[in-house]
Length: 68
Image 1 (cartoon, rainbow, N blue to C red):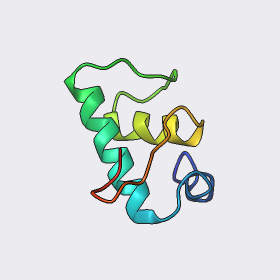
Image 2 (spheres, rainbow, N blue to C red):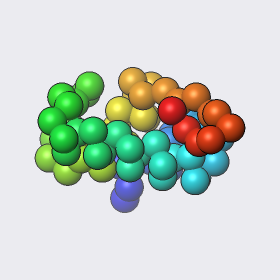
Image 3 (cartoon, rainbow, N blue to C red):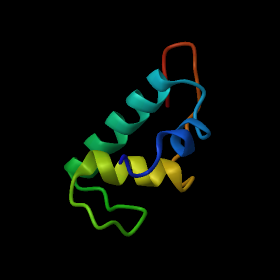
């Protein structure tokens, strides 16, 4: 089972592409040394990023050139 659930994640973004880009960017920041915004059992940056998105700690802004 995927944790956090996909339906929870999709309620935070407008499409799956946005979710993938947002999670990848945040995971990259975590790998570079940013601290996690949530307590997680996992040590994997992508899982931590997805948990942050599911809990509403990460938000995004759509621009003409991409996602910020």
